[in-house]
Image (cartoon, rainbow over all chains, first blue to last red; front, side):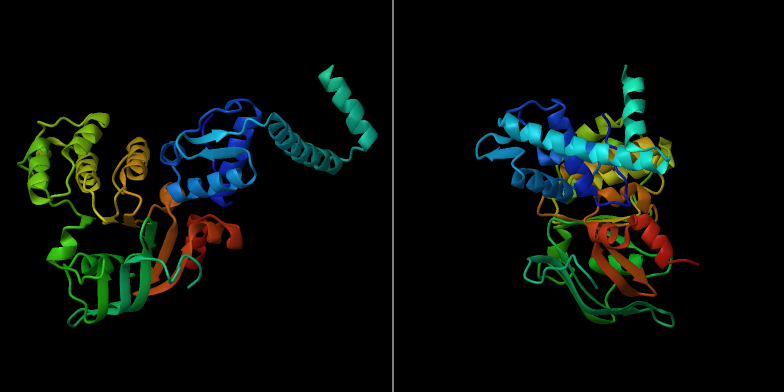
Length: 119
Length: 241
């Protein structure tokens, strides 16, 4: 997974979203240790302070935890990860519904289309 | 001026009413007051003739201010600051007859804070032969050599004048990674460039210069939030011809 970052939006929020996805998708499992700020910043080609700020945000939300001796790791609270996963899904679904409405579909039509496509 | 400036922060560089007027020439730097905090990567951006190189030369003690003051770590540019400032000039100055290994030794002798191991590691990553005489290297490779030498010091302030202008995109990515992973977190990097889009993600803040004056000092994230634009797009808007 490469770092696709858009320079016209705040970089730190894009990093937050990306690491959230990596956690809810299991790329980083509960309890996994995360790379250092510096290493991740170098990999993403972003400023270390920006990466630090993203980590700060993820810590505040509880998704990642800092241990004094072993650096940062993903929370082991699976419920919390599930909650964030649902929030991210709700966002994507909302976006999808908006797009479909723009195309002129009603709720019922969208649902039946979805059924057809996933069968 | 907006954002980026925390007055109680421990500033590394301070400019107060700094002015440089060349004899029988223009005012290249016109009454600039600004501070650069420690631990930042700062882009110094402006069109040709905006005063970037004059400001950089004053920071390096190569030009004396006409009026005003400039301090690095509390010292005016001189012997004391040269020990702690690592400077990449716009034009190469390394003697063509020397080999890569020779300039490494030269730097190691000249600068106490030079880290040979770091330089060798970077030369190896970029496949630059140590026994190659500089005159046999391409322009881009020579620029890489020079940048590696400059980044291999444990300096407080790195001043890079157009560091990536002549190198290919792959090497540019490597150089950007090198800058991120090698600089000490209390050190500040001041980087002047025309190629904003490639480097804007590694910047903390930018200083826009025009006609020798600071027209903006801001964090890059503030520009993205407040203008909804990349720094590159905003720069083009501000400096539209």
